[in-house]
Structures are given as C-alpha cells and as structure tokens.
Amino acid sequence: MGFFLNIIWSGKKKGNMIEQNKHIKVAVVQSAPVLFDREATVEKAFGLIEQAAAQDAQFVLFPEAYIPAYPRGLAFGTVVGSRSPVGRRVWQRYWENTVEVPGPTTQKLAAAAKKARTYLAIGVIERDMQRSTGTLYCTILYFGPDGRLLGKHQKLKPTAGERLIWGEGDGSTLTVLETKIGKIGGLICWENYMPLARMAIYNKGVEIYLAPTADARDTWQATLRHIACEGRCFVLGCNQYMTKDMYPDDLKDLKELVEQPEIMCRGGSAIISPLGKAIAGPLYDKEGILFANLDLSAIARSKFDFDVVGHYARPDVFQLRVNEKPNRSVTTGDKC
Image 1 (cartoon, rainbow, N blue to C red):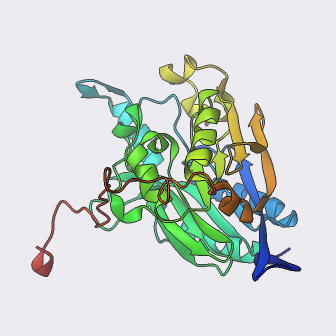
Image 2 (cartoon, helix red, strand yellow):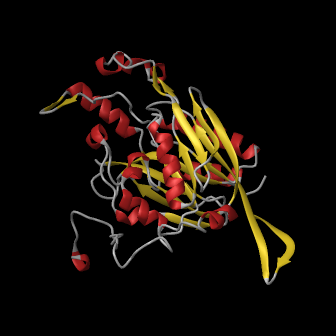
Image 3 (tube, helix red, strand yellow):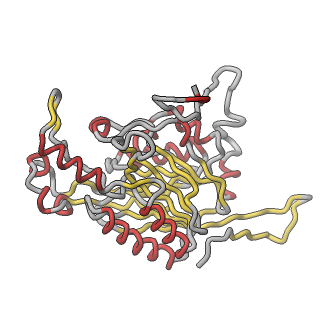
C-alpha cells in the first residue's frame, strides 16, 4: 500500500519521445452516515478509509454532506411565512453536529488520511465560526497522506430546499489541488449543471474531477459522462445509499419523514473515463466501495480531438471572468 505516484517508463524511444504512463488507484465510497451523529459518523468513516487503504487506494472520495448528514426529506418546520419551534430544535441538533474547519473533526480526519497514507476528499456540513456562527456550508474537505488539510470547496449554490439550511460559497474555494497523484478538484451535486463553474474547474487543468451528489436519478449518470467528455478528465461520482430507518428513532415520527419512501436514496456512484465510458458502477441499492485503476496518460490521448479550454476554445468570441476573491458582507480597516 502506498500513495506515491507509480510512474512506468516504457524503456522504448519513438524518435526523441519517451512514453510515460501514470497509474493511480482510487476508491469511491457509497455509504450513509450515522445520521445527526458527527462522532459516530467519523468513526464509520475511519473504518471505510481503512478498507479502501487495504486495497491500496491512493485516493478516497466520500459523498456530499457525509458528516453529519444530508437531511433528505426534512422540512425543519418551515413553510412559506413561518417556522415552527419543533423545526428550530431539529435545526439546532443538526447545527450542533456540523464541522468546524479547522477543528477537532478535521484533525481526526487528517490523522485517518495519514494513517492510511492516502489522499482523502469528504463531504461535510461546515459551521462558519469565523464570522456569523449561524451559517452552514456544504463543503468538500481535502486531506493529504501527510495528514494536512489541503483545502476545501464550499458549494456555490444550494438547490431548492437546501437554501433554507446552507449558505452560498464564493469563488475563493473553486479548488483544484496539484498533488503527487494528479490535479484533483470538482463541484458538488447540481453545481455541476452550472456551465461556467465547470469551465472554471477545467481551466485549472483538473485530471480527477469529483462530483459528489445527492442525486440518485438515472439522468445523473448522463451528467457524469457529459462532464468526462467535456472536460476530458476522469470523473468520480459519489452518492449515499440511505433508507428511512437510518434516521434517529425520535425523528422518524416527523410528518415529513412518515410520508417518505423507505429507500430515500438509491446511490448511483460511478467512475467515468475521459472519453465518457463507465470504469466502475453505477452502484445502486446498497452500500459499497468502488475501485478503479486510472491511467492518467489517457487524458492526453483524449484531448487529441477536443480540449475545451485549449484548441477547442474560441477566446476571441467567448471569455469567462472568475472572481476568486472572498466575498464578505462586512470589511473593516485597510480592507475597505
């Protein structure tokens, strides 16, 4: 087991060219958290990271909002024009189990990545403790095999009812990390339907594109394949498998949950090649870990006929400006 890049030289020259192949092994975890229980979910994640590492995975991806939960089916006592006291208490419980970045939970996750000697990306609900303390963000956290927190991405635009519980990220976390196993970055769930956001990620040379999601519909598979073909990158789609009985017993009687189907999320995790072919998955109707060996040299071959930010671009006709500055509602002193 190891996280170091495996570079294989062919030993043969074609003219003055030496062929290089770069292979890495990745793992995509399809799992549900211990809902509304941060510490128990972290412990479950530890076990899954160890399982992936035992299969020599050099990179491990977890779903969107894995810690402490994607609160599928909950309304938090909200209708247009009012919020209920019961809903506020459910919200407080959710808030109390979210993740400070950095904080004790990130330290534990960093230690797990270091122990496994693997890169790790995991979806958390991040509690903003630097400013308001009241806003949550849907976030991907990135950790290195040396135990460092390498970066994060906050979801730019929560979808539909998510906007009741999560704030909007800004361009400062449109993250693509240059690592020993390639350039890693991505977007969360329906952010991937934002063409300009995808272009911002492609422009950073992403090779392993992450698309954690809560969307288990068949149409999501077409989305993953489209991103791979468009960006000419490997795409890792990652979702939860979740049933209603996974909710804590004292929440199961909430009216909105009673009306939900027993299987609340089927999953659909998959790994896609730069030419849009499924390498692993999709995995439905159970928890599990998908593994794939990625030949990163396939990316160059795939860009022979299409490079969306290179020879297939028309900057004389179309241009994109990306604001990557932190967006703050209040600035003071020299920052004004």
